[in-house]
Length: 356
Image (cartoon, rainbow, N blue to C red; front, side, top):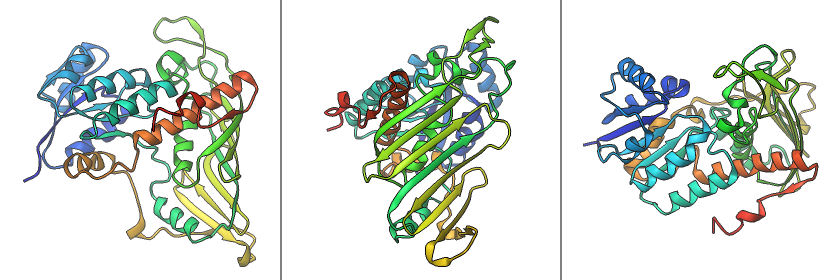
């Protein structure tokens, strides 16, 4: 007999509709019993579309409801912190959309609340990048394919924000997204699965299109997050990392991570989900394809993993609150460095004792 689980949704946005609802419904014994969106009419529409029995006008009521076992938070980052704290305090498992929080302080408070409830599962929706080849990359690194890891390139360039007449996106509104910027957190999380953590960052950011029309009020507003980000980082091993991110380069873009060492190079094209590489001993001009065998091929199984952790106690791999805290500290360090013009050390000093 599988354990029956009743799920409540706070925020039935695009990713919830595309991934979480079908992913949860594919697991036996899981029922989505309630939904709460920003507006009652939106909640009613989602309930009608997906056949969800109950709606709530206020997320606080859903989080407190005794007939709900777990809460899936599909909102923008501004609600991740309060909904997580309330749901955990009410004895409910939590799966929250990324980015984990608005700030590192919020992320630490969420992780502390999760530690106070070890019987509950607290999981962050992971970066989808690199899941397919994650096992193969880790095996190659462990086998010494690169030799000594020396340099890393992390690139995420595109033209999604290149149109100056496009309205303000919620990701550009600091009151909704906090310090999160472009794909910085999602790409850093991906890299963090494979390499040691950073100990220092220095950054610069810029908004090439500094104002946009707010679709809510129809007035022009200054954007709250940059559309161009560059970061220099040093890992605890001494390896150097360069991050180059842009939302305003419609030509010549791409998304990849390249790891360069004393003996080889690995290149993961994150858009094509394709791994290539070369060792110095191969004496070839071009990187060769590195196959990902079917038995080692990963993929998206976030919702199934969440339920498995609840039912069987399996530890969260993709992605734990601890990992979410780490990438929120990195994101905040980037923002602080850009503002001050100075390098910022990691982990952030004010949180040193909180996770111990």
